[in-house]
Image 1 (cartoon, rainbow over the protein chains, first blue to last red):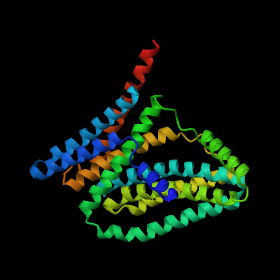
Image 2 (cartoon, each protein chain N blue to C red):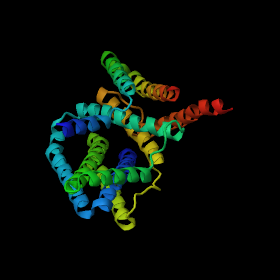
Image 3 (cartoon, chains in turn orange, cyan):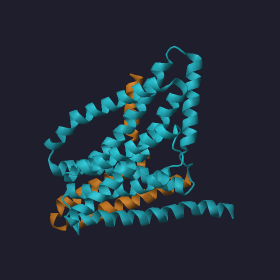
Image 4 (cartoon, each protein chain N blue to C red):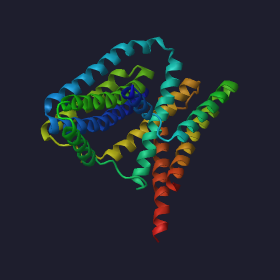
Length: 68
Length: 250
């Protein structure tokens, strides 16, 4: 059981290192998805939110790590 | 055709470089087990890991065709963003000196020390422990390679080119490892992770956008633009992350 738990934890660790970064990325995707759904004619706005939101999330995560 | 090439080369290169990093990490552990306990348990564990990986790919591969393309692009895009930005964040922090660089020689020394300690405590079970160690290493690092290949290749039917890049990297590392019998400590791991993190993040934004119905200007060429933007921002982030330390010293 411990082996399985460890394996699952390591598997999850492939995608999530800084939990806050992962959460912000998901939030950015949800926001971009809402814009794409509500304004299908302006899908580029959703694309811009996605790209610049991810970049901002990355910078914020790096800044947090530097402060720690 | 031109547009397709714009997608194929970054996918092959990203699969090759990412697999290179994973294969080097797996090789370090396999070598540590082989040196402490011999090639038999190390090889058996590694082969068992490869066999389980092959089973997973064979079982799950055909299921990919059943998933609607938009949903597949969205799910893979999000996973690529999580995976790629995690690598990129770590590479930025390492390049800026905020966290130490990954040292393959140190990882090798730690692994061999742990195995020797286990040998001291329980000699009889060590062959199993050694085999289990290489099995886990090959399986986990291999799963990362499989994920990267699927993520880079499944969205546009490029599984074959991405697989070729990954297999070439794994074979190259295995061949060099067998010849030199030492961990490949001189591979510039952080530079590779930096480059791969940028590529995976760029692919992640592209696929997620496609999955959400975004009509990217320039179609597939948008990936190259995204990669350039991620590179510029990451280089700036390294410079900014270094600054507080320099200021503290002055």
